[in-house]
View 1 (cartoon, rainbow, N blue to C red):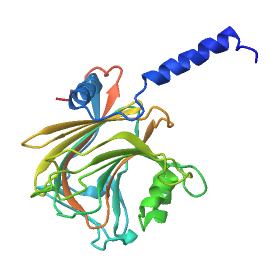
View 2 (view 1 turned 120 degrees about the vertical axis):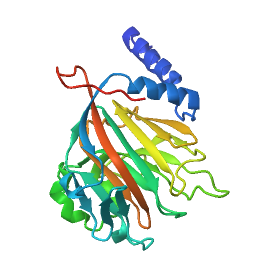
View 3 (view 1 turned 135 degrees about the vertical axis):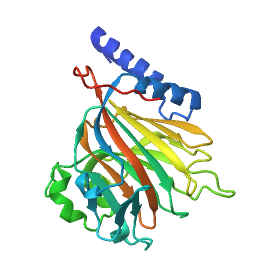
Length: 285
């Protein structure tokens, strides 16, 4: 067998070294995740969307599903999915009318109302349609196809990042929940291969009736998350080194059947290279 030419040998060696330095299944590391979040939060952020969640929700949002309800009050915006477990018509997704490009910071106050032991809440980040068949890139063009907002309609036909959380009652003896990330691969094989490592199982978050301040930063191919309540703060980091990047789209809030929660002060900011004169930047604490 003839040896590889020198240039190819050098290239192969570089690839092997790079792969050796990767961590294929990274483990949660609180100190590392906090430092990564703080690095991502640095820079000039400009607010591009703001909703106190106390007025007419239809001004800024549109709804997938005909069973779930959205109600606003001085305390915030309550999303209540239908109560029939395993009935796909009882899911709901609330989408921003606005679409967002580039690196984003999403923050809001979340208070769980239900005490369900099943199903999750999901934050969708920069969702667009696959562009195949009726699933136009602009998801508002096929809202009619999501009157029954089955989960598969989304992961089979959308590009989006997905953060699922608040999965268990997290009260009494059960103080463990999970936080999980995905990058959907539309027109593919369902959820297979969409996972973003690592999985987290934090304790002491998302108990019923406890307000949580949630901040999620999507920056390039990484997602950074901070969750804070009156007792503790947690940091989480998901990386997407191999799947296609996501650069723009809408933000959505999914409640699976049986789930309900209240939201307040929902804000989205965009990372700016340079803030125009007269428009203040903000920082993340």
